[in-house]
Image (cartoon, rainbow, N blue to C red; front, side):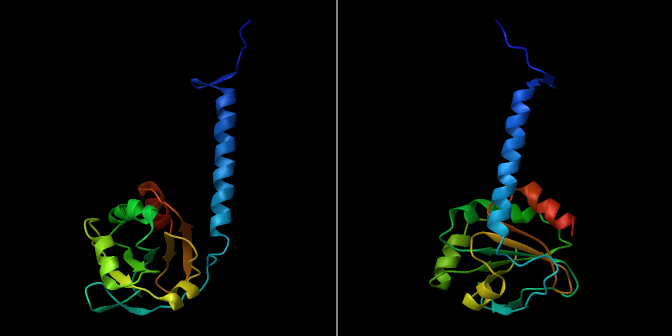
Length: 168
């Protein structure tokens, strides 16, 4: 005897329930990972940090929205997701901030070959504390007045980055 399934598109309804359950689990996991991050509308601290090139650079831009990408050179997910930063609009100030590194050459070795064309800043434990970075990679989208608009932790796809930066 064959079981009859209510069809929705080309998938039986039972598959849609699985997809809905996966979305709920993913949403809960995302909320859990972001629970300790700065909340939207929080005023952030701007830092003038040394860059990988040797000059200094401010994290924020008072003229543009800023995407701040925090990474650690030991983070394999960071290595996978960093290439996605190139898709962010030039209307957005994008900076990459290294944390939990032992020296500049460790960060340089990590960055080499990734095609990073935005400032790579050398962060410190004070920056990690003020931005509540507890996992890598962590992202913040901050408006030109220094208020958090969006946040994320973990891998962010090209679509995810575009959605976060275009929604801001």
